[in-house]
Length: 177
Image 1: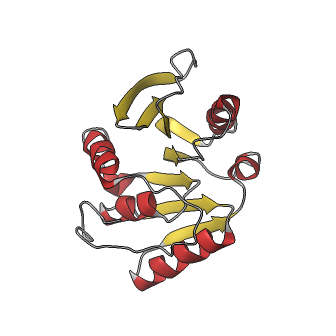
Image 2: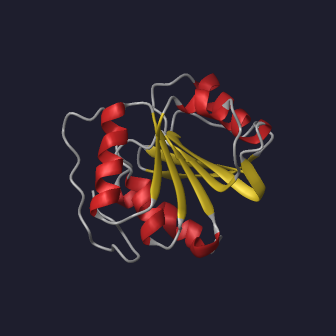
């Protein structure tokens, strides 16, 4: 994986093969951040990265100027990899090793963007529950959004907070406000 833009542009990060992850592809990530560049000022937002895996999305946000990023993953090896990479690159990413659903059940702070990339084989109802927990627990700032990465088989147009979705190959990003 590589960092697409910002202060770390072009930097390659190689995760151990044993990590149980499916990183967002560079093509999809570039498309997502092209959208976000038109919507937010990266220097002024707080980001929560759920199911963060390798930290791919967190690194991209930090590279673009986000100073407050929290990465949550329940796999201790993933969390350790993000911590090590963050230290090596001198990034200030707060890493929490916890199940994302359990994390969201105890509101602590709010964010401008919550990005979630759960396992694609997770039941559709769990994807919806994740979005609901984020909004019901006041994790999302006013004018903030939840971005959910999922397979193209799932659709969320009937969710009351749904705004839009974008497809990139087998990946889909759904946006909720």
